[in-house]
Length: 136
Ligand SMILES: [Zn+2]
Image (cartoon, rainbow, N blue to C red; front, side, top):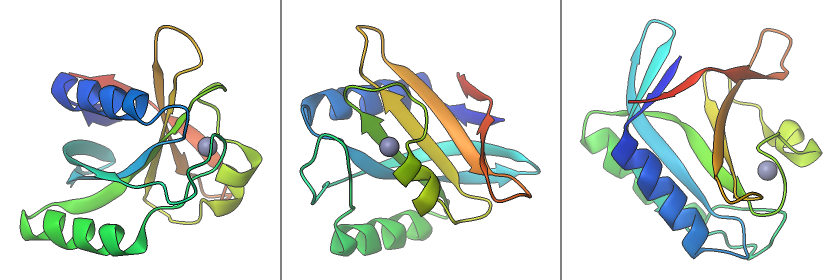
């Protein structure tokens, strides 16, 4: 199970809406307790592709963000990106690029008026599987 605070959820949605029509992306820091993850820090990164269907994080920002959250005592839990016009289902490319075990991949769909945020992780077969996400 992955826990995200209401405040962080709102901030992620607001940031992704702000970046429209492009995909938005960022990193998630937090704590791990057994199989559960707790998002404690959200870091917003520039999508240097400026694309409606792809994203690449700015490597410099990525490096600084990881350093920043480690200095706060958090671990890198995963990342998030938005799908401006499609569902919160991992795309073919998302599946191809997902290769970090123990990493959470969050996708926010802005396709409909109501945003949909879903979390995925790599299972033993190396395939993305949904993890229950709870906004608390
Ligand atoms: Zn995607």
